[in-house]
Length: 358
Image (cartoon, rainbow, N blue to C red; front, side):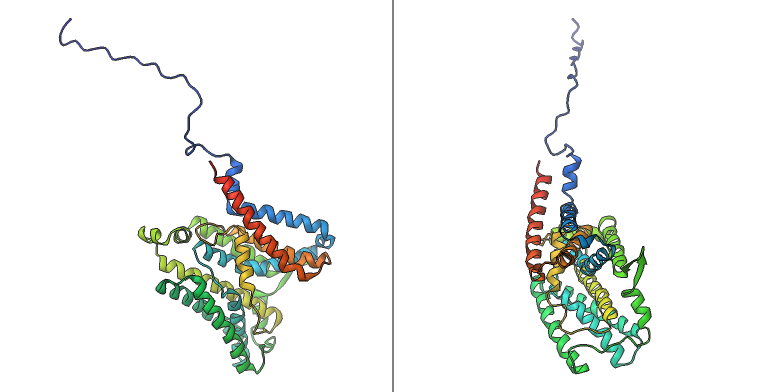
């Protein structure tokens, strides 16, 4: 045999075809589990259960006007729950949201009446004030590193005191004067507090704005760079900053979004009732936060959606009006909400763990 002769390469037989082996990480999970992993699915199922329950327990709910009332109550909560949810996904929360609504309405009402201005001037100034309060909350938070609980608790107390003291100082009363005869009132009411007929049922314009803002918030979260920033700063602020996310800008603008929501709901209250009580809003911040938590947002941040709080707000509106339509003692309302909040959190936790378990 020649010394230069090369050895023949070994011939290997390919293995017989069979099922593909996976290590559990690359295998695709079933569709049902992937759906359950979505933060809004659990609350959607809960909202359906509450709706069906009151359809049976309170036959009056089946009437179109009754459902319009439920949707109206839900929308007034949902309009604020949306920006509160975005803020929570970003890792923070705002205890001043409830009294900020009242502060905005008081600002617009007193400016318009006391200075005999067009109602739109009061609306514009109230928007500036609301955005400034939100920006201040965010700025203090990022500059001091204090927890948002402390920062916004201080703002809550400040606004609560200012609302009452300034209103009594300016009007001599605990409520603003009636502004229904001011210039621009009718046009502003049409935007913030009007209603329209749908098949003989009067639907408040806030329901439309609620749906529009929910769709916009969902698009921002899922389709924009800013939405990615919100999830990033909520998940890990330092990691987000390390990869170039503008943490300071994101945090401040999230608080300003809460200010915008407070302004919008405040304008609705003002132009619905023509006057505002200075003590309103205390306790509402917990309702907004609870609607967001029931909707699947975590207090630790980095997880949630804009659709979940829509169903969370609907559950609140359904329970609020359903108890009345069923003829039950309304004193049990808050207790019912507490049970619903705890149950929703536990269900969401269980569903999320089951859906992400390998």
